[in-house]
Image (cartoon, helix red, strand yellow):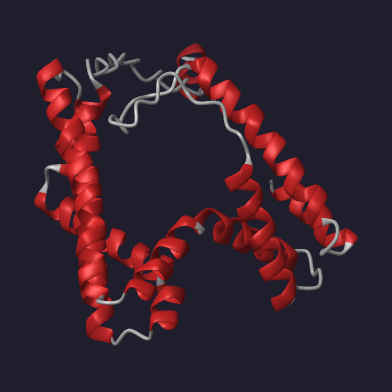
Length: 239
C-alpha cells in the first residue's frame, strides 16, 4: 500500500507534444509572376495609381509654384504625367513576368518609346508656352540634384548642423548639375537607346558604380568652396 501511495503522489511528467513536420511550399517557378498577378488585382492597381499620383504631386510641387498653375491645371498636369508613368509600369510588369518572345519584346520596346516620345508634345501643348515648357524640361533634368540636396538638408537637420542658405543651395545645385552633365560616362554596351528596358551586365554595373564615385568626388571637391567643413563632411557621408 505504501508503494502504491508513493506512486500516486509522484509527479507525472508532462506528455511531449507530437512533432509535426510541415513541408515548405515549393518556390514559384517565376517569382515575377506573383508580382504581376498581384498588380492585376483592380484594387491594387487603384492603390498604386493613387500612390504614384501623390509622389508626382510632391516631386513637381515646386515647379507648379514656379509656373503659377491653378489647382485644376495641376491636376491635369499630374494626369498627363501619370499616363506616361502607367504605360511604363505596365511594360515593366510584362518584362518581369517573363516568357516573352522576341516579337513581344520588340513590341514592348516600341510601346515604351512611343509613350516617351508622345509625352513632351502633350505637355508642351498643355503649357502653351515654350518658356514654360523649357522650365519643365530643366526642372525634370535636375531631379537628381534636387534629391541630393534634399538628402543633404535632412542630414544637416538631423545632426543639428547649420542649414544651407539659399545661396549655398543654388551654388551647390549648379555644381552638381554642371559636373554631371560634363562627366564622360562610359557607354554601357547593354544599353540600347531603343530599348530602355535592357538590363546592364555585371561589368557595366561595376563601371557605373566606379564612375559615380568619381563624379561624387569631383562634386565634393568643388563644393568645398561654398560649404562649411561640417556641411561638406555631411555631403561626403551622404554620397
